[in-house]
Length: 69
Image (tube, rainbow, N blue to C red):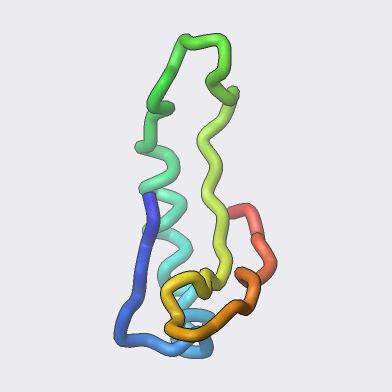
């Protein structure tokens, strides 16, 4: 799952992160692996928080650091 906050600056998302964390953890707990039971499937469901910049027009900046939740 990807969450996108189009009307928030990265600073606003970072400030709201503590309030969003319980909902993200609840979604992670309910998530199921797409290819469960297949040899190439990972053993866990992961949630990662980072600032993605691929939609910024004219920006070649890399994504922000990834933090596992």
